[in-house]
Every structure is written in C-alpha cells, then in structure tokens.
Amino acid sequence: MTSNTYLTPEQLDDEIEAWMEQKFDTKIDFDIHGPLNNLAKIQGKIVRDGEDEDEISDIPLLTYDENGCCRVLPLDDAKQLIDYIWDNAFHYA
Image (cartoon, rainbow, N blue to C red; front, side, top):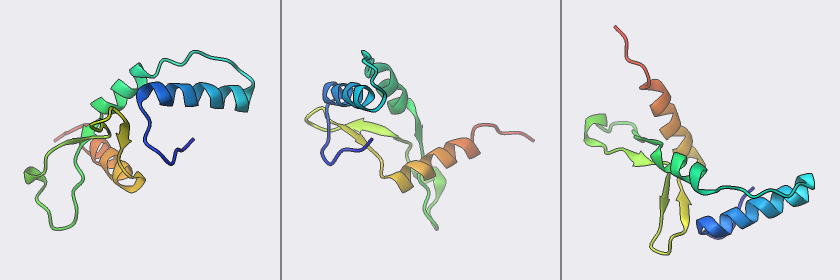
C-alpha cells in the first residue's frame, strides 16, 4: 500500500482499514499508534562510503513533519538503516 501524499496517523489508519475491507472483505479497527510507535523506535545509521560511522547520528525509520504527517525514509535508505541495525545487533569476540 502506497500513497502519493503524506498522511496523518488517523488518515493512514482509515486508509488501512479501507484497504483491508476492499482487499479481503474484512472490516477491522486497526490500531495505528502501536505500529507507528514501533517504527519510530527503530533507529540506526546510514553510513555512506568514506564517512566515519562515529560522526553520524542515529536516525529513526519514521518521523512526523510539522503537520503531524508520517514520513518514512526512502526505501533504499530504510534498507540500509535496517541492514546497519542487523549488522550491529550482536557484538561478540
């Protein structure tokens, strides 16, 4: 599911519920705040070639703009951030 415009959590909730009803003929009351909070807590770094990882701040996968709309990283950046998190999840000998 994608959108050409940025959505508030409430608008996103409505879109998901409408999509579920249309796609699966299932009416649900989706709780958007839990999943959005989880996405906002996912934080990591996007380290480009030649950059010093120690000088880069963690960034969240999801943020909100000044209008309260959800903003996620572009897909390639999101994949790189998740890859960074995975690579740094466990440190061993």
